Image (tube, rainbow, N blue to C red; front, side, top):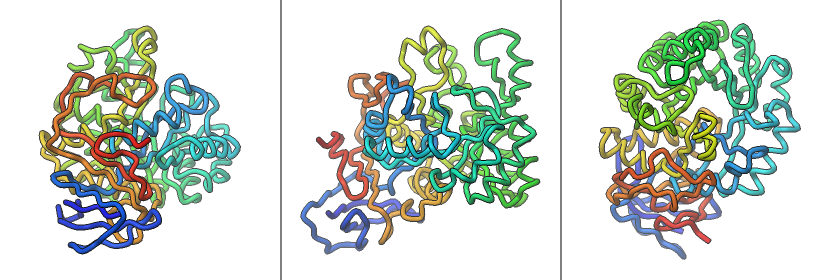
Length: 414
């Protein structure tokens, strides 16, 4: 197969032809390649395959909401070629047996590459190293969450030390439960989880990381400008600390959540100033990863139980085209935060850029093909999107995974 068109590199856009053989990139040259199948991208832009390091595929245990097959179809629809799945399933991924079962299930059913995280709790803290051959990283929840996994504050430094010994990063859901409890007072709404809860928790994470400077940490779904500043300061001080920005925190602000109860998330949507700080952080390289935090709940759970979280995989490419066209984010910044940085963080040396020898994962986006999000076109099993009814500047046109054309001209392959 040959893919020809405008390729995103570290220095910008470059016209090139990509030769693919046996699932890998065999050649990259200006012209002259021939193959049994040639995709001419035209005005579309060729990115290295997008890697979403923060998703909740829900299987095993919550298959009524999503499973590896439907979640992977949503990923392909959104131009995503690989994901890293979180451990808070009904049977949490906190031991090797659970990790093996989940990995085997993903390999059988998923159309995209699925890597998994191992959960870190007080009960398994001393044994997390045993999971290291099966996981790409560990996840610590520093406040109550779906699935009931919580790591006490006082154990965070030890968790970082043990993760470093296992040569794995530790991603952290940074919210301070004491601040949340003091703020809620039994009320409902975004004030239940104020910005100060995230900031206090990030400060604790930085303090713990100072005790274990050889460790690599990641602040999941940063939602405040102060969080981005704290992470940047920690990096300047020599610490290995990253942070994510979720699509919904970049696109929506608190006023949108006040008008639409389906936008309830943890952490909540924030003030417009925080949204803009995240956007600037993405443009300036202060935000490491562009993620969905794909959390498919059924509509009745959102409407009657107030479940927190929104789906996002179907709309990854939609929001990327908006970030480029409306947010002023350079395509090379997208390639870095959606492919290069995630591959480095997860230790996936075989992908993350368009280069000879890398796995042939490509996300090809038409930036000038306006598309309105419609429920009947979604692939996620939960069947709804927080972006429904909104028009985006473009869409995923081809998604190629391991040299296989799984999304072709906007349609999933049979």
